[in-house]
Image (cartoon, rainbow, N blue to C red):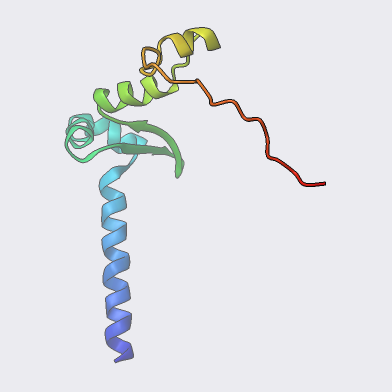
Amino acid sequence: MTTRKAISKKRSARTVRSVLTKTRWQLQTAKAQFSEVFRRARSEGPQLVTRQDREAVVILPAEEFERLSALSRQPQSLVRFFAESPLAKVTIDLERKPDYGRTVDL
């Protein structure tokens, strides 16, 4: 039974490694097979390119880059932020009933 667990662990580790190698490229390999890296970035998602076994850059589809860039853009001022908010045209009822407190017996 322990042999089965050991085999299972080896298989899962191999699967994890194979997934990582599909998305992780050494710089020289990425340069030689740029078309393949490009294709995989479009179909499978971000591809990591390493240099000297350190993550150096990530190649990702333009749409994903635009989406991430849009999230990081911030308006110039707080006033502009609120003016451009989707909730800017929503009317909120800010009227309150007067609160006269409660009666206390002394």
